[in-house]
Image 1 (cartoon, rainbow, N blue to C red):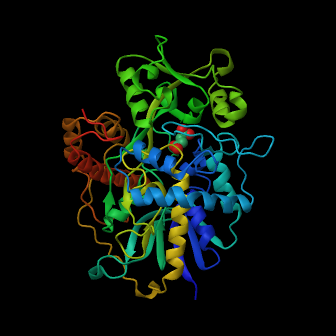
Image 2 (cartoon, protein in one colour; image 1 turned 30 degrees about the vertical axis):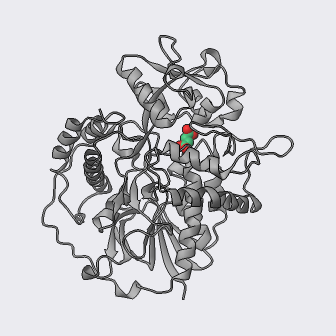
Image 3 (tube, rainbow, N blue to C red; image 1 turned 90 degrees about the horizontal axis):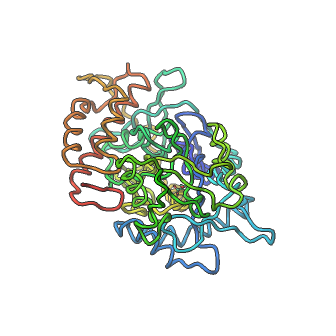
Length: 488
Ligand code: SIN
């Protein structure tokens, strides 16, 4: 009898894992929206990997550690950097294409804090979409349930400290459903939905972290949230990423006084690590300056960055005329998350986590650009291996959750939560703001089980309050600035 594996999330992490397991297990992928809605689909930069003879593992490892302020788990960094290229070669052998020159050599891109050109990209700035769609296109035995909003894990035995054996979700019609499994993998992506300014897909709201923590899973490094410095700004709204690869191809940050300010701030200038650039852009805006990305020096912009070009056109920008893209920083990537080991296992037996919602320790205090897709490929392999070798079934031992809810808390207005989260947990953090936020949040964080009469919107809001609370506690506990956690 094949094991039943349920994967929550359909970005590259969930999709690649489903592909690796489909022949050996009964695999179901539940996804909150549609299978093509994820941060992976929006990943523009590419995938960092040591594939060229001019590059070395030692150099990629060093860049990853330096960007992460040496808060990284060195064993994980080494494993990902060394194992990643082989998995990429396997995918290339299966037919995955990366951009090449006329002689068939890969065109390596450059991004912040890399000491080498080592970013493989596909379709210019469409790498995430190309890889994720490629992997999904190879599915043969994968059951997909779209519009499934996973709410809580079911436990095997309340006394046996949370052995996973199923989960409950709200289906498309907002009816409660239950699904049993031998193994569950949380691959729900990041937490951009906590903030008013973000590059993330609209479905990303930290749900996987909230439900795992409600089930008792350990979390790690929640205070480290990466802000991307260059998101297209239209009427102060974030309207799509402008990839760091654009700066890798010669774009420069400039303010409305005409000052190319990054060149004064850091020896790596416009390609300094993302935390440093975001903090400087933020400072410029606090000083009343508008900030732009000057793309005058970028050759063949529309050809190399078709997604960004299309997006600019859709907002009416005629970028070939003035070369200035208005930008602002926003929440981009979550370095923290559900704590996992090298096999992707969480602290709850039979529960795994992968991708942005997991914290393997590879990224430390600030992720090196384009390392996340590589991490996903390596951890999907690790988890698939772990699941294949372990042999047991828990499905028949499920304990029904009771539906009794003692306290039904009020929920805040989402706009108010966004505003307060940005003030307290944004690019520059102040202790008093974080303390005030925590006091405010604690009014909302009292349930352990989600009331069955809540809608998806209410549960999402509650989940965001819950994770905001945990993030703020960890941020307050880290008194000194480190990487993306910048305290004044
Ligand atoms: C970007 O293209 O700037 C983002 C890539 C990444 O987050 O690694």
